[in-house]
Image (cartoon, rainbow, N blue to C red):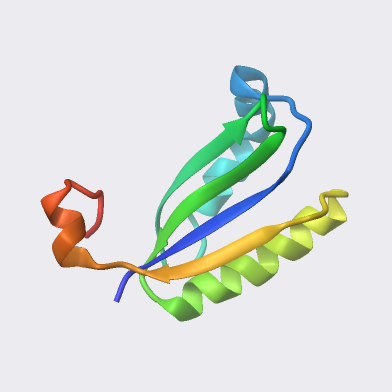
Length: 101
């Protein structure tokens, strides 16, 4: 069963295209993570937040990624990392055109 991982953390920037230019290698590497289906990058310059929404094939893959990503963010000096894994209700999500497999 597909699961959704939501991650956010306090982030002072950079944002937008500057962030994209700095993190394109990281974005490419995420495609190689076991069980990843897709990621949507999230940012709020006003709220000083960064994060992402991920769809994984299963809970095991999402949990492993969350543990690895949390450690990586902490090494980068990021604190207040919040991660939550949700089951996906495929039936209702398809009604609302959710990008799920």
